[in-house]
Length: 252
Image 1 (spheres, helix red, strand yellow):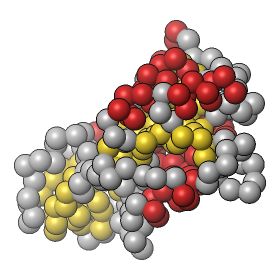
Image 2: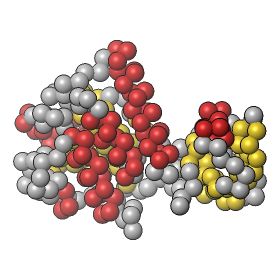
Image 3: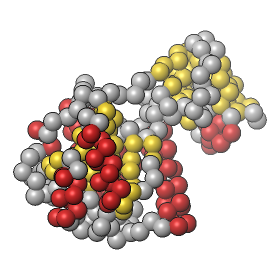
Image 4: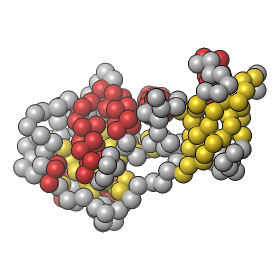
């Protein structure tokens, strides 16, 4: 069974070496020592969310935190092709379900999208609180899936902002793939970049409007069909990312 993962702040693991020790403090230390009752000799991993992983065992548990004896320090490099899920805001918790599963699959960043047909609207305090929930969701999913990198949660874009983002990605040699049931090209046959960003754009429950799709395609996006079935907004993104991860050799 894989070791449980606990999160440290970025940069705090930089000076730790093989054979050294690390004191896991704060909320994560309390969670490990008090809630999960990790004891001496148990395997644990500590990650900084930016690619550094400490593999070790618990040496001692005290009021100060959990002392970890580091057996190996590993740096997991950022992949050459960065997978970015552009997830339309959706009612209920369907958008959060999407980014949770996407994190488990291996997405590198998520972008909240205020699509024209999105029923949910992020404005003012609600926008800040909703983004904070997304941050908490990807953080928890990172730990659950034993990842060393926490996906970035970017600020929300409206459709005009997404068009500009797609144009910048296309101009930089990346790819933007818009999942659409009426597309004739399959995701499996869509060309992928060798480096840079690959955006996966998922619309809301009501779908992506023709005008909205046209502006994205004009900016450099490619409309692709995921498969023979129409999936919910909470399902489409993670499934597409899994297929792309396999094509990019991430799972081999």
